[in-house]
Image (tube, rainbow, N blue to C red; front, side):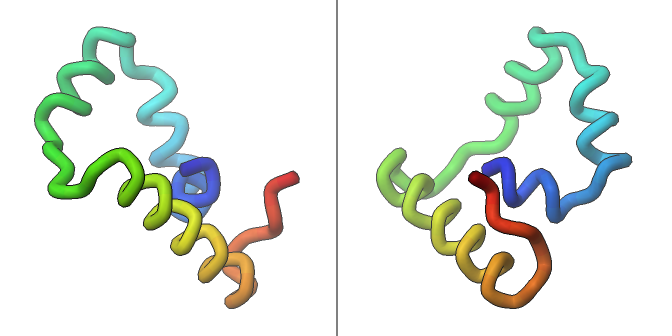
Length: 61
């Protein structure tokens, strides 16, 4: 997830950072994932690996 947020950009990350926790919960509830928790984790890892291998982001330690 960190890699995905890094790819989104600093401006977008700052926008999310200024949201109150209640607003974040509302935002999370508005977006329903069709994937299971395990599938989401796998997809996040796959996207991170893709971005690293294609020079889009630096590896996160």
